[in-house]
Length: 258
Length: 319
Image 1 (cartoon, chains in turn yellow, green):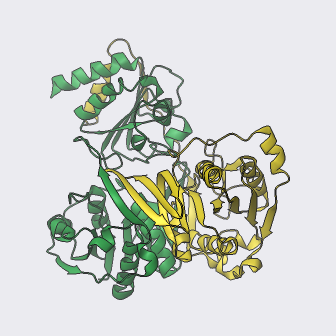
Image 2: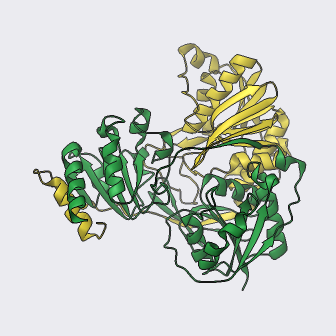
């Protein structure tokens, strides 16, 4: 099975993050890492490859420095990577991003596309369905379990009321949450091997997408302004003197919660 | 006044979710609200009274097995056809997994901008969105097409405004690609009487400090006394204390209740990402230096196994 995993480089969600002066995600000063949920997507792909054979390809759209995350992804075990890299992409909205990724996927002809359910920067959660919409393939999203039986994919996805079992034939897009598996750590051998794995770079011209369709020029929405949220002022802090529970209820009562 | 389409979210036994009432309330500030119901046959009729109570002037119904037996693609296709026909001023959807998925497909179909995780939307289309775990507040707008916005639950207080909507059945005309993802089973898991986590006005969460799954009874007890939902930090979920669907944080649910009580939660960024837009935050933690106290409006430094039972007892006394 020919599997492509979508990987996004994001600023580390455990650190201070902000938007830059041009209202895009500040990446220059940030500690940039693989989007955490994508590691679960890579693990899911590797497990299928181990059981059924085939090839695993990483697909990333991002600036030059996203190469670090591509190598990190490859060190887990995938065979090769494709990096969509073009200055005109800076400032792209989700709608335009899906157009570019769909075009890149068109050149790779995958049976299965696996993505993290959301990125920790935008948390927009729409890319798998946007890509499926453009490619005219099924989207099985939000999987906590994925099984492959020949050309049939089956997922379980959590809902508010329980869970659903959803099935589709390949080709399809699957997105996964962090409940699906435990991603492996790259081995030393994997890290060394990743340095030699092929990474193909594609520009917009290679994908037949015009510069005006993407980036700020082609964006369907714009950020008007952004500001740091004023830090919450810490309030009262009391040490429990044996009456902490009563004091807590006093406070809740004063705020009309009790 | 132009129509504003509101995607209705309801339980499978046809109870309208609170977020839908919030969306109808918001829609009334933007135009004339029209509710769009997708689901099993009979869904719209079952929901009509409640939707009318909150101001739905019209109800569009997309019902039947083709809609209900697949993931979101048939809904998006049917909604896109409706948008093209009625030319609404905006489309509002809940910022839930399904709401976002439909919105994403709709944006691609219409080549239209998309705003997600919106907490405010003005009549001139400017949306307010918390970003990066609530550290940043972003204002943005759609520059191509109409505002298609997914709105977070608990972003505003729903208010009734009676209307008497007629139900109009939508024609379902799907392409081959719309019915590829088939729902083959739906398992409804036993659910208690607690409100849903993202919609609850009170959330009581437990963290690593709760110590075990058994001890979560304390968290549940306090939640039940306050009529709230139960949440858990990632540390508590990873330790197996509580199921994943109750996880609050960066890789779990984002909640914004009137009152959030954090028990034995240190307040790592991972957790803050999911709760720091709560109106009032209360924390109990034995570590006086825990970062959760930087957010808390009221904090008790102490042993939660002493403080929480005492608080529960005190609430019972006052009832």
